[in-house]
Structures are given as structure tokens and as C-alpha cells.
Image (cartoon, rainbow, N blue to C red; front, side, top):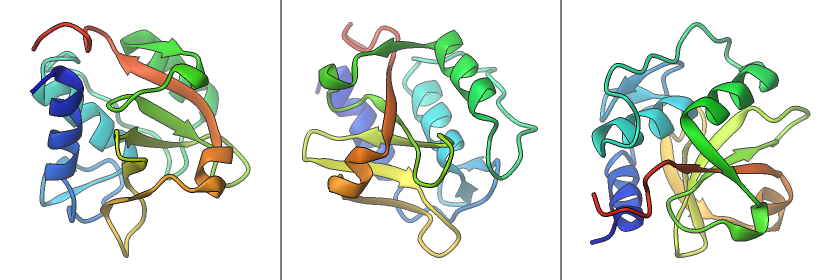
Length: 142
């Protein structure tokens, strides 16, 4: 299994984890940022001591983008691949993260009723993509 497949497999292992703002515990609770951070930490793609907290229910877009740029590599939207992290603008501001799969789906912590879920990256979600980031080292063997 290559690194991208491992990212997707780890994200899928979080499915059904309840939504919890700033949560970071598999099967206990997490939010969209927590999912992206913890998948990266588990696979050694982000520092084990990385703490991303103190943000409101709707993260500040410039700060979220600054943090993504600090720990990940921004890529062209057209170059996205399974295992990449999408920054989405589901409402009026870009404040939501999801992990892309190779199957045309995305995995993300969506809300209190669904928690971590995987669903099709349909036209509405595709139009909400405002940026794509890649875990550094993802194309090297883990």
C-alpha cells in the first residue's frame, strides 16, 4: 500500500467518529481539522506534537490557510489526487477540510448528526473547492 492509499485507509478508519469541535480522538470525536491533522500525525506526515486548537466553530480562513501552508504543500486544484486535503467553501467562507479519495469521494467530519463520513464529491462540493494541499513527503514511501 502506498502513502496515498494509507492516508485514505486511515481516514476511512475514522468514519462514524462523532463530530466534536476541536476533537482529535478516533471513535470519540473530531472535527474536519482534527481529521486532517490526526491522519497526518498517525502516518508521520505531520509533527506528532502539532497542536491546532483555539479556533472558533468556523475557523478564520486566512489563519487556516496560513497553517495549511506551514505544514503542507499547496498544489494546483487540477493536480489533486487521492490523499490530498481539500479546502472547501460550503457556505460563504473557505473553512472546511476534507480528504480526497481515488474513488471520487471525500472523507470529512461534517456535522453533529453525521460525524466523519464519506460521500461522493458531487458538483456542488466540487464547485466549493478553493484550494488543495498535499502532505509533505506523501509521494515518498512511508
